[in-house]
Length: 338
Image 1 (spheres, one colour):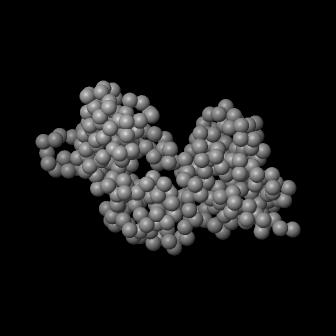
Image 2 (tube, rainbow, N blue to C red):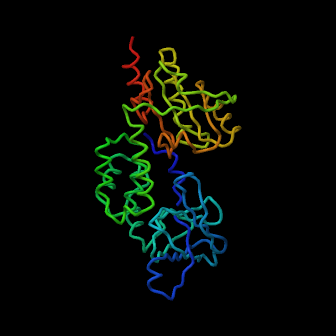
Image 3 (cartoon, rainbow, N blue to C red):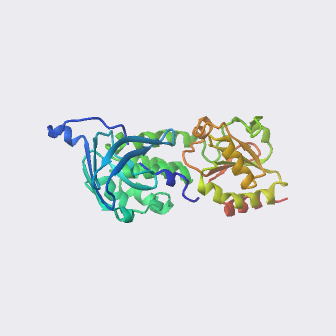
C-alpha cells in the first residue's frame, strides 16, 4: 500500500500554556522554540499540528519573524509532531516538539537541510525518511527498536492502519512500549485504533452502514450481499487516491460482470469537488459520502488515512485489506474463477 495522503498532512501538538521562565521546574515542563532562518527578513511564523480525531490542521500559535528570528513558548502534554509555516502555507518545517529548549536554524532556500537541536524525539524522527514511517520493514524497526520514544508510537499509529499486521504482533508492539510512552497522546489514540482494528480484522464481519450516493439516495452495505465487494475509502483532495484510480477502474471493468462490485466512500466535504473528481477519473462504481469529512463510517473502520480499502466476500466477511490493484487482481482471479 502506498503511503496514504496523511503524508501531505504531516504538519505537526497540544495547546500551549503560558509559563514563567523564572522557575526551573516550570521550564523543564515547558518548551521554548528559538528560530533563526536565513533568507527571510520579516513576516509571520505559524506553529501547527494535525488533529488525530478530525485529521485537520490546527494552528497553535503565531510569532512575528523579525530579521529571520522568531520564537514560541508553551507547554504540551507529550511529544507531538508539529509544523512551522513561514509566511504562508508553502514553506514549512516538520519537527517533533517536546517540553525542552529547541533551536531551529537554516536557510529559507534549502528547508530540507534545516537543523533542529534540543529534541530527543526529533533527532530520531530525522534519522528516518518520511516514507520510512509507512514502509512495513522500516516501520517495524522503529516500533520495536525504540519503545521509549513517542515517535515509535506515532509510527505505529500509521503502520497499524496501512499494513495487515497479525493481532498477536500488534499485541507485542503495544506491550513493548515503555510506561512514559504509554502516557503519550499518540499511544492513547493507538489503543483506540487497535480496539477498532480488532473489530475489522480479516475474517470479521464488515460493519454495516447506510450512506447517501451522489443523488442523495441512501445506499446500504446489505444491498450488495451476495457479491464480492471492495470498499474504497478516498477523497477528491487525496493525491495518492487519485493516482490509484486508473488502475482501480481497470480492475472494475475486468471483474464487474463476475459478481464483483466497488463501493467508493469519500471523506470529502465539498460536493462539487467530489463530483468533479468522480467525473474526471471516470469512476463507474457507486459513490457514497456524508460530505462531513472524516466521520462515523471511517471511524468504525479505523480509517484515519487514505487511500484504504476492504475486500468482502458475498457474506460480508472481510477477506482482504489495503490491497494494491495488482494483488487485488490476483485475489479476484482466484475467487471469481468459474
